[in-house]
Image (cartoon, rainbow, N blue to C red):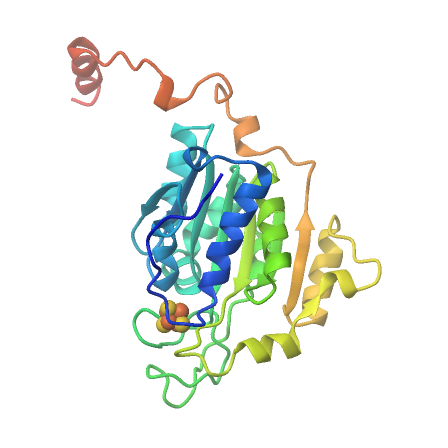
Length: 284
Ligand code: SF4
């Protein structure tokens, strides 16, 4: 069960995305998955390259569309473990509509966002996660827009699994990804993954100083949505660990009629000429 392949990542040395790659590989192996049983679907951005760096099925999609693709893959082949990934620009700007609806749909997919609070591939512009006042080439006088609190967004969109981790904490990140894959429903995992080249504010050191581990908060209960919201507000969203999990709510897969019996990739579609013509005639 080796999820490594021979492709050498071309991320900058020190980029947080290396740890996300290693954690996905380790988590999948720890769970006992096989490479041919996993599909990794990515969007566009530095982080989008990850689907080419892991030995599994992979699809490097288009900007902001990792989740529609991942949902299509899961619907067509229910037996695959489907992981979607991308960056904060990909998932929280152009792809935000898909993110919210995928969360509330609750399909059995794990979505991992490499959140570096900047657009790295296009050489350093503000993203929806950049803090107000953040100076970049696109905001030389500082960003005048608020940063979106994605964890609160996920919770208020009906998420059943919400976690946050940090590239520098490989052990926690691997464990969170394992839990996310094993969750029966949509798991949303935001990973602070520093861009060492363009973001000189939210660095590894900055996160080490500012991030609070939920396991260090006495009695924190991830089954309570209210407690999750309260804690996020108290710490301004800068927490790591399992924030919320609802094990009771049924996944899309459990609720959709006929899904358990059928899988598109193994179905006999019987699409002979008669069927095709009948189908077309219904639209004429
Ligand atoms: Fe990573 Fe930033 Fe380099 Fe992109 S530009 S590979 S996000 S360090």
